Length: 217
Image 1 (cartoon, rainbow, N blue to C red):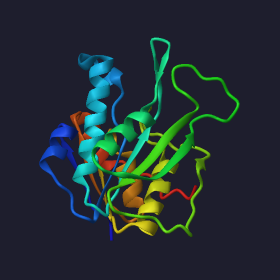
Image 2: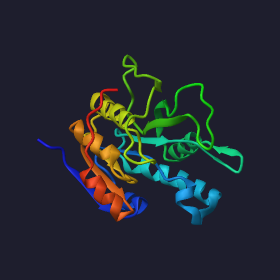
Image 3: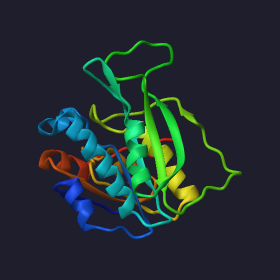
Protein backbone atom coordinates (compact mmCIF):
# COMPACT_ATOMS: atom_id res chain seq x y z
CA UNK A 1 0.00 0.00 0.00
CA UNK A 2 1.38 3.40 -1.05
CA UNK A 3 1.67 5.99 1.72
CA UNK A 4 -0.49 9.05 1.19
CA UNK A 5 0.97 12.44 0.20
CA UNK A 6 -0.84 15.79 0.03
CA UNK A 7 0.85 19.05 -0.99
CA UNK A 8 -0.91 22.40 -0.57
CA UNK A 9 0.09 25.56 -2.40
CA UNK A 10 0.16 28.39 0.12
CA UNK A 11 1.85 30.13 3.03
CA UNK A 12 3.22 27.65 5.56
CA UNK A 13 2.73 30.04 8.48
CA UNK A 14 -0.92 30.66 7.60
CA UNK A 15 -1.45 26.90 7.25
CA UNK A 16 0.05 26.27 10.69
CA UNK A 17 -2.11 28.99 12.22
CA UNK A 18 -5.20 27.30 10.80
CA UNK A 19 -4.33 23.69 11.66
CA UNK A 20 -3.68 22.14 15.07
CA UNK A 21 -2.31 18.65 14.44
CA UNK A 22 -3.45 15.32 15.94
CA UNK A 23 -1.06 13.15 18.01
CA UNK A 24 -0.21 11.05 14.94
CA UNK A 25 1.36 14.03 13.14
CA UNK A 26 4.92 15.34 13.48
CA UNK A 27 6.32 18.53 11.97
CA UNK A 28 9.66 18.09 10.20
CA UNK A 29 10.86 21.16 8.35
CA UNK A 30 13.59 23.64 7.46
CA UNK A 31 12.66 27.32 7.77
CA UNK A 32 13.70 29.79 5.04
CA UNK A 33 16.86 31.91 5.25
CA UNK A 34 16.69 35.71 5.52
CA UNK A 35 17.73 35.83 1.85
CA UNK A 36 14.40 34.20 0.96
CA UNK A 37 12.43 36.84 2.92
CA UNK A 38 14.34 40.02 1.99
CA UNK A 39 11.52 42.44 2.78
CA UNK A 40 11.80 41.63 6.51
CA UNK A 41 15.45 42.62 6.89
CA UNK A 42 17.75 40.45 9.01
CA UNK A 43 16.37 41.54 12.38
CA UNK A 44 12.77 41.18 11.20
CA UNK A 45 13.57 37.74 9.79
CA UNK A 46 15.04 36.63 13.13
CA UNK A 47 11.82 37.67 14.87
CA UNK A 48 9.78 35.87 12.21
CA UNK A 49 11.96 32.75 12.52
CA UNK A 50 11.62 32.52 16.31
CA UNK A 51 7.86 33.14 16.15
CA UNK A 52 7.43 30.50 13.44
CA UNK A 53 9.37 27.87 15.41
CA UNK A 54 7.18 28.64 18.44
CA UNK A 55 4.06 28.33 16.30
CA UNK A 56 5.16 24.96 14.90
CA UNK A 57 5.91 23.66 18.39
CA UNK A 58 2.47 24.69 19.64
CA UNK A 59 0.64 23.09 16.70
CA UNK A 60 1.88 19.54 17.36
CA UNK A 61 0.23 17.51 20.10
CA UNK A 62 1.83 17.28 23.55
CA UNK A 63 3.35 13.83 22.88
CA UNK A 64 4.27 14.55 19.26
CA UNK A 65 7.45 16.18 17.97
CA UNK A 66 8.58 19.18 15.96
CA UNK A 67 11.93 18.66 14.23
CA UNK A 68 13.99 21.36 12.54
CA UNK A 69 16.90 21.05 10.12
CA UNK A 70 18.83 24.32 9.88
CA UNK A 71 22.24 25.48 8.61
CA UNK A 72 23.86 28.59 10.07
CA UNK A 73 24.64 31.47 7.73
CA UNK A 74 27.13 34.31 7.71
CA UNK A 75 25.87 37.88 7.24
CA UNK A 76 27.99 41.03 7.29
CA UNK A 77 30.95 39.11 8.68
CA UNK A 78 28.94 37.63 11.56
CA UNK A 79 27.43 34.22 12.04
CA UNK A 80 23.70 33.74 12.61
CA UNK A 81 23.28 30.66 14.81
CA UNK A 82 20.01 29.11 13.72
CA UNK A 83 20.26 26.43 16.39
CA UNK A 84 20.01 29.22 18.96
CA UNK A 85 17.02 30.73 17.15
CA UNK A 86 15.26 27.36 17.09
CA UNK A 87 15.89 26.88 20.82
CA UNK A 88 14.53 30.36 21.55
CA UNK A 89 11.29 29.66 19.69
CA UNK A 90 10.86 26.22 21.26
CA UNK A 91 11.45 27.63 24.74
CA UNK A 92 8.75 30.23 24.11
CA UNK A 93 6.34 27.41 23.22
CA UNK A 94 7.14 25.41 26.36
CA UNK A 95 8.77 22.62 24.36
CA UNK A 96 11.80 20.63 25.53
CA UNK A 97 14.80 19.39 23.57
CA UNK A 98 14.80 15.65 22.81
CA UNK A 99 17.96 15.67 20.71
CA UNK A 100 20.37 18.00 18.95
CA UNK A 101 22.33 16.27 16.19
CA UNK A 102 25.17 17.71 14.15
CA UNK A 103 24.94 16.84 10.45
CA UNK A 104 28.12 16.96 8.35
CA UNK A 105 27.51 19.02 5.23
CA UNK A 106 31.17 18.69 4.20
CA UNK A 107 33.97 16.34 5.30
CA UNK A 108 35.65 17.37 8.58
CA UNK A 109 38.74 19.55 8.21
CA UNK A 110 37.54 21.65 5.27
CA UNK A 111 37.32 25.45 5.43
CA UNK A 112 34.00 26.87 4.24
CA UNK A 113 32.68 30.30 3.33
CA UNK A 114 29.15 31.59 3.93
CA UNK A 115 27.83 28.36 5.44
CA UNK A 116 29.55 26.03 7.89
CA UNK A 117 30.43 22.41 7.18
CA UNK A 118 27.67 21.24 9.55
CA UNK A 119 23.96 21.71 10.10
CA UNK A 120 21.68 21.40 13.11
CA UNK A 121 18.97 18.75 13.52
CA UNK A 122 16.86 19.49 16.59
CA UNK A 123 13.80 17.67 17.93
CA UNK A 124 11.37 19.14 20.49
CA UNK A 125 8.26 18.00 22.34
CA UNK A 126 6.19 19.33 25.21
CA UNK A 127 5.55 15.96 26.91
CA UNK A 128 7.37 13.13 25.12
CA UNK A 129 10.39 11.63 26.88
CA UNK A 130 12.81 9.28 25.15
CA UNK A 131 13.86 5.90 26.49
CA UNK A 132 17.27 6.54 28.13
CA UNK A 133 18.36 3.06 27.09
CA UNK A 134 18.00 3.86 23.38
CA UNK A 135 20.81 5.94 21.87
CA UNK A 136 21.28 7.32 18.36
CA UNK A 137 24.39 8.93 16.84
CA UNK A 138 25.12 12.52 17.88
CA UNK A 139 26.91 13.25 14.58
CA UNK A 140 25.34 12.24 11.26
CA UNK A 141 28.14 11.78 8.71
CA UNK A 142 26.41 13.01 5.54
CA UNK A 143 23.38 14.78 4.14
CA UNK A 144 22.60 12.32 1.38
CA UNK A 145 20.90 13.09 -1.90
CA UNK A 146 19.65 16.67 -2.31
CA UNK A 147 17.09 17.17 -5.11
CA UNK A 148 17.58 20.94 -4.85
CA UNK A 149 20.16 23.17 -3.09
CA UNK A 150 17.92 24.07 -0.11
CA UNK A 151 16.71 20.55 0.54
CA UNK A 152 17.13 18.48 3.65
CA UNK A 153 19.46 15.68 2.57
CA UNK A 154 17.77 12.33 1.99
CA UNK A 155 19.95 10.54 4.56
CA UNK A 156 18.93 13.07 7.21
CA UNK A 157 15.28 12.61 6.27
CA UNK A 158 15.70 8.83 6.57
CA UNK A 159 17.22 9.21 10.05
CA UNK A 160 14.20 11.29 11.09
CA UNK A 161 11.78 8.71 9.72
CA UNK A 162 13.45 5.89 11.61
CA UNK A 163 13.33 7.97 14.78
CA UNK A 164 9.61 8.67 14.34
CA UNK A 165 8.83 5.01 13.73
CA UNK A 166 10.92 3.72 16.62
CA UNK A 167 10.31 6.28 19.36
CA UNK A 168 7.06 8.15 18.66
CA UNK A 169 3.44 7.47 17.75
CA UNK A 170 3.71 9.88 14.80
CA UNK A 171 2.91 8.30 11.45
CA UNK A 172 2.32 11.42 9.34
CA UNK A 173 5.07 13.92 8.53
CA UNK A 174 4.07 17.56 8.01
CA UNK A 175 6.50 19.94 6.30
CA UNK A 176 5.03 23.47 6.10
CA UNK A 177 8.01 24.69 4.02
CA UNK A 178 8.41 21.59 1.89
CA UNK A 179 10.20 22.94 -1.18
CA UNK A 180 10.37 20.16 -3.79
CA UNK A 181 9.29 17.57 -1.20
CA UNK A 182 12.42 15.71 -0.13
CA UNK A 183 11.12 15.03 3.38
CA UNK A 184 7.73 14.00 2.00
CA UNK A 185 9.22 11.56 -0.50
CA UNK A 186 11.50 9.89 2.05
CA UNK A 187 8.64 9.70 4.55
CA UNK A 188 6.51 7.87 1.97
CA UNK A 189 9.39 5.52 1.20
CA UNK A 190 9.39 4.57 4.91
CA UNK A 191 5.63 3.99 4.93
CA UNK A 192 4.73 7.31 6.56
CA UNK A 193 2.01 9.60 5.25
CA UNK A 194 3.08 13.14 4.33
CA UNK A 195 1.56 16.62 4.13
CA UNK A 196 3.46 19.52 2.59
CA UNK A 197 2.85 23.23 2.16
CA UNK A 198 4.79 25.23 -0.42
CA UNK A 199 4.38 28.82 -1.59
CA UNK A 200 5.72 28.11 -5.10
CA UNK A 201 3.21 26.30 -7.30
CA UNK A 202 6.06 25.00 -9.45
CA UNK A 203 7.91 23.47 -6.49
CA UNK A 204 4.66 22.14 -5.05
CA UNK A 205 3.96 20.32 -8.31
CA UNK A 206 7.36 18.66 -8.12
CA UNK A 207 6.81 17.84 -4.44
CA UNK A 208 3.68 15.86 -5.32
CA UNK A 209 5.61 13.45 -7.53
CA UNK A 210 9.19 13.38 -6.19
CA UNK A 211 10.41 9.86 -5.49
CA UNK A 212 13.41 8.94 -3.35
CA UNK A 213 14.45 5.66 -1.81
CA UNK A 214 14.22 4.65 1.84
CA UNK A 215 17.95 5.22 2.42
CA UNK A 216 19.69 3.14 5.06
CA UNK A 217 22.38 5.60 6.19
